[in-house]
Length: 275
Picture 1 (cartoon, rainbow, N blue to C red):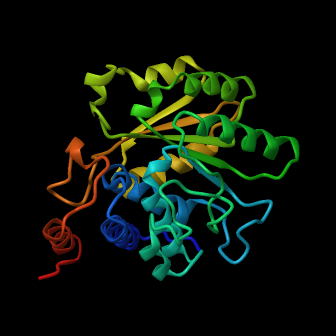
Picture 2 (picture 1 turned 90 degrees about the horizontal axis):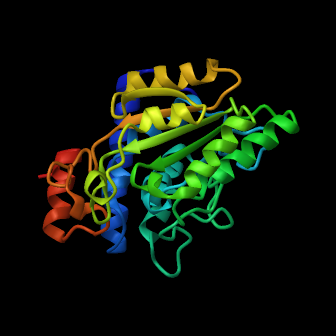
C-alpha cells in the first residue's frame, strides 16, 4: 500500500487523531499532546514511505520504526490499527491491565511494534543497531527513529548521534518532533535547547527542516532523505503539541492527562463534527 494523494493522507491523519483521543479518554490516562503532534508524521511513514506488510509483520526485510518518545504510544497504536496490524476494537484496551496496549509500546505484545520503548534517550542507540545490522547483513531496510525535542536533553542521544555518523548510517532517518513543550514546561524554559539543526549537523547529520503537519513537506523530506548517501539524516519537524484539538494545542498541561467527558465531546466535535 502506497497512498500518494495528499487529501487521502490528511483524512487518515484525522482518523488517527480521533483514535488517539478515544484511547486516552477510554484509558483515563495517557499523553495526548505529543501523540497528536506526530500523527501526520506517522501517517506518511506507514501509508506512503515504509516497506511494511501487516500480514507479515516480522519480515526480515521490512523497514523499522523506533518510537523513542514511547509515551506517545497512543499515536503508534492508532496508526498500526488503521494500517491493519490489529483490530481497531483493541484500542479500547489502551492502558488497561487486561490489554496489550500499555502506556509504552511493547514489541513482545503488539504486532507491528519494532522496539519496546519508553525510557527517554535510548531509541537512537537501538535504531543505530538496527541500521548497522541492515548494512552488515545486506537486508536493505531503512530505520526511522522519532525523538521528542525535550528528549534531546538526554546525553545518550548525542552519544548515539556520534555513532550514527561514525558508521555512515545513510539508511537511518531521525525525526525530531519539535513541538517546543515537555512535561515541566517549554523546552526553552527547562533547558534552553537551541539550534537543533546546527547541533545535528555538527555531529555529521544531513539536516532537513520542515512543517511537521504539512503532508507535502513530509513526503518531500522523506524522499530527500532516501537520496542522501554516506551520512544519516535528521528531519526537524516543527509541530504543535495537541495539534487538531484547539484547546489542547500548544498547552503544556496536555502533555500527560486524559480529557474529561466534556473535553472529550469537544475534541470529538472538532475532529469529526459530532453534535
